Image (cartoon, rainbow, N blue to C red; front, top):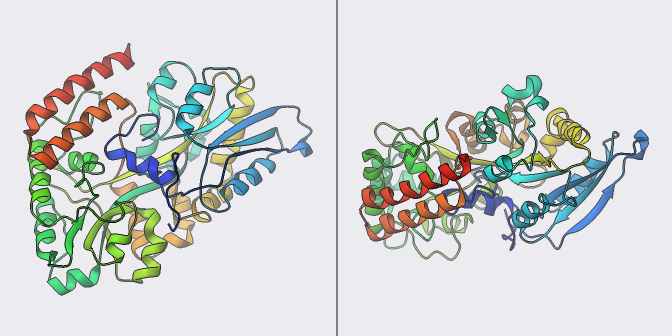
Length: 436
């Protein structure tokens, strides 16, 4: 995207948080971080639908998107609804903090969006209502990893609106010139990065921090592990993970990584300017990549180590309903209408305001921008090898502890076993807290 990231939480920032300081309340990846730049300011607008003769008034909150036309689009969607008068509120600044605080009062929204669904504290605090009954036969059409991320104790707490993702982009011409094949394994990635490095070009760019902020999830999935097991126990303190992290430290010290780039990983300028042959970035960069490079780029998931699998982090803002709403049933009906029934609006939201992926498989097939080339490959990765950025029970405290450990391991060569043992202690404390 051409737009720069704004001060608050846009979709790009949301997804970028997934690998490091991903608070459970804010996280994608997909996201969501996710590619939407600065907006001039917030506003509140009533999108009245009095044609239905309804006296029910609903308040709907969105964070402040930056792409041109987004605010007008959601107001238009709301005005098309005939069963209630929906007032759209465009919230600038720290949306997560404002929305979380508002849920504790009687003046909050009826319907609101939240990164990867409501946080575990919102759910256990009974601040939101379950929405699983809204999907019906459409359930199988949504990205499974995102539905799983938004599910707790068998109940779905948010409806995904649109999907964003991170992935590996490479310059085809540079790999061809160096006689390098696109890496399929983690060892291949290190070998390719070294072979592609010259006195003017680095082989790989994974962020100015050496991957600390974005590779926390991919290195777990690559080694056959995850943040948490299926029964919500720590799954990262394992020999395979230690080996994978040691390889990331080797990569950091190899001289093959681009460090200190003018713009960080979420901006494609490093690979466009030829500073690197491969870059970890997001789907939202595709318009810029296409304009600058034409067909001289392709995409890959993060490669697998022995015993693991390739992966991409995905994220999505989700539509949620406040438990304090005086019109819970009406709010749920509106969410179902917009994010389950109105597939034309869902496709419009994904494709007309930036470069994103619909949250439903059937709509991916209909999206013109995703029908061919590298974009089609990326879209298939979402459901084939996509992982939600972090689990629902991965709290801000857990995320901070993990990110701090990654920084010491990847950048300074600290012992992975001892560092992750300390993280395990924090994570267990958090799991006990949220499960109490």
